[in-house]
Image (cartoon, rainbow, N blue to C red; front, side, top):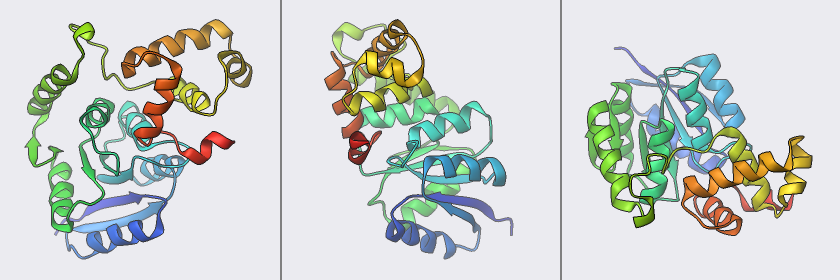
Amino acid sequence: MEQIPIVIIDDHPLFREGVRNIMDAEEDFKVLAEGISGDQALQLIRDLRPRVALVDVNLPNMNGIQVTRQVTSERLGTSVVLLTAYDDVEQVLHAFRAGASAYCSKDVEAGKLVDIVRHVARGFYVVGDQVFDETGLEQWLSSGVEAVRRPHLEGDVDAFTPLSPREMEILQYVTRGLSNKEIAARLGISHQTVKNHMTAILHKLDVEDRTQAAVYALRHGWVRLQDTRK
C-alpha cells in the first residue's frame, strides 16, 4: 500500500499530538515530521516534500497563509490543509487565493480530517463539506468573492488577493503600533514605499485605515497578540 507522506505544523503540543494520533491510526498515512513555526514548516516541506502538510494558520514567525503562499510560489508540490480557530468566509477566500487545498476548523471531527487528507492527496480541494476539482474551486472562489464583495468593490479583481511577504511584514509592524516612518527605518526602505504598501494592504483587505487593518490581522490570526509587544 502506498502511504501518503504528511507533516504536521502547530505550536500547541496537545493539539499537534492529537492530530498525529489521528494520522498514525491510518495505515495509508505516514507522518514524516512535526514543526512548531512557519519557518520550520517551510524548511520541512522543502526538505521532505510531503504530499500533504497540515498547517495551523496562527503560527510564530510566519503565519499559515504566508507558508501556503510560499509553498505555492516555489511549486513544492505539497497540498496544504490549513487548520484554524478563525473560521469565516473572508479568511477562507484568502486561504484558497494563497493556494491552500483545504481549510477547516480545529474542531473538525477525526474522520472528516482523515477524509480531507485523502481528498487533497489525490489533487482535490475541500471547502467545508464540498469537494472540488480545480475548475470547481475557481468557480466557487469567483462566486464567493462576489457574495462578500462590498458595492464599491464591484468589478475589482484584486479583492482577496493574498498579501505579499513585504506587505505582511509591514502589517505585522502596524499591529505593533509603529508609524510608517518607523517601519521604513526598520526595513531600510523609503517612507513613500511604506505608504504605497499600506495603500495596497488597505485595498486588499477592504478596510479604511491602518487601525482596521491591524484589527483584521489580529482577528484572523495572522499576527499574534504577543508579537505586538516586541
